[in-house]
Image (cartoon, rainbow, N blue to C red):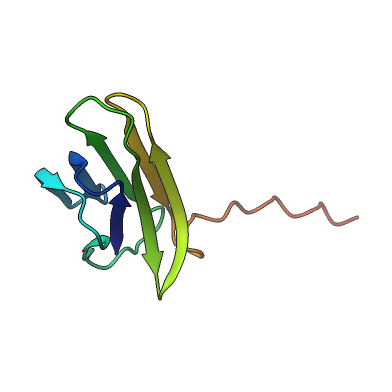
Length: 107
């Protein structure tokens, strides 16, 4: 899941998802509790979950994004810039294509 938090009252928009399925969030506001966005299954060789959320009004408030898998935070990003962007990406273990080394020549 993708969790967005930060300074309550901070407005933001953004996207999250994989190469095959992206969800958009428009005109949301950080509350007193984090907001969780459910993500479908992330799998397949080289699949990656990407998140990018930006503050939509200038100010020094903090906007934070986390990727949570099985209750554990696996990636996070935050910004407190005027109109900053918080990003995080995660690739599940075992989904990267493994490179195989050529076998040594037999003597």
